[in-house]
Length: 414
Image: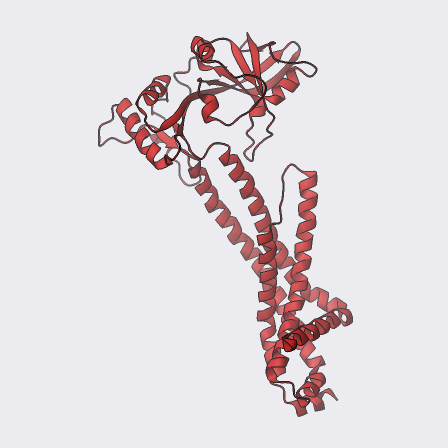
């Protein structure tokens, strides 16, 4: 233990001395390691932050929820749209049959959306998502009410002209007053506000409940013909029921509803958030590979820089090596001394790169809406890569130093 501590102390002192005595040479040599670690870890920092944001956005859709639709979800690759465009639209009749036949669904809801302008007096807000939804929509879709209430069963069934509005709409149309009980105009009709959604902000995909309104589907369809609209049936699984089990049941129900022959392909899609997750997994894999390639070249250059410093250090300290060996220092002591020094130098470059990333994450997170996080895992990765580069770069110089003949070494240094 004493020998190891002595090795570390002397290696640290020699490394520090190399930086002090040859500032420009050392800084230029360490620049490669700094840039390499910066490239690799910055890519992984952005990658992890994006992944975290995307996972949260996907989670908001519900991990135990399936979406029965006309169009299947897909991430990348060829999309054979010509196979899907003639499929029948999902309908309220499909919803009723699923509600009647499903044993694994906890809740089932129907939703359809158009974008319209919403007005109150002289105030208006454009391009608002107007959703026609069934009664159980609040059981399958994540949202909270900050004021008012959701539709009652009788209000949904009768198609009453009532609406639940998003936070941004409430603030835009009613900057100084309570919207509950007021009547806003949608489709040119007066509709009473009964609830206001809690502010959420946009997710990674730009979606938000802040700029949507919910109407009972039975009122919605008195204004717009929904037969040819791209609708969605949202099905939430019961506790302990897997998505695969629910998917199998829904497939059987939908094939029965559509009266498909055993050999016929499905003319509907059952989507789930896992499709999006897998698509982004492959994308992130590509990003990570690119990050390693870009950073790898810098790390390679940095490794040569460390090796250069160590070869020069061996040459400058040949006399000292000879004296150490004459006094009884073993070859492995000299070897480890230079290896530790190479690792220390490389770690310094890596830590500088990590500090730059840390500063940038703080600046970006405080000046933009995107939150960057330098995780503990990435810090450990950066330090680990730096140490490995230093170890590899220092092997040859350290080995050559350990093999020096003490007499020749002292004579060369004179």
